Length: 141
Image 1 (spheres, one colour):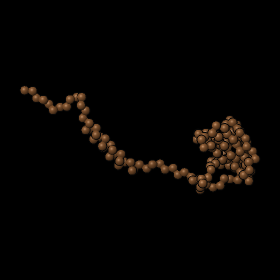
Image 2: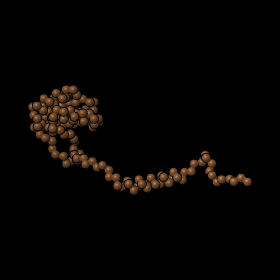
Image 3: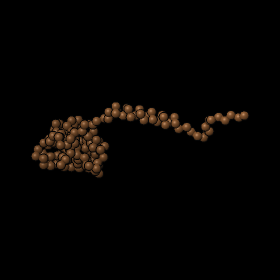
Image 4: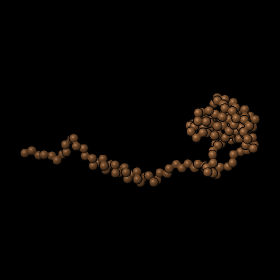
């Protein structure tokens, strides 16, 4: 007399333990998810920003990677505007900073310009010890 075992054939996989493990993981994630606080970035609002200084030097980064340096007088009238290469920016900023060390510099980036290009200009300004750097924005309506 031969006894037949109630064993499952090898080609069938018992998925019950896998489902149990998945349910335990689901419960763990559901319990811990509310405890994890997301990083909150408090960005400044354009409506609350102060007015731009009287005569800042403007560095404009265009979409085609060209850089324009614009200088205004106290009334806001443009009296000097020139296109510079990225390599010439350092010397120009150094010369302007030597004339007026407290003069602020505003960076205006085109809407379609890559963010790293604006950061590259900001980095160059910081290398030239320009301490008053701002970003030029268009006020929201």
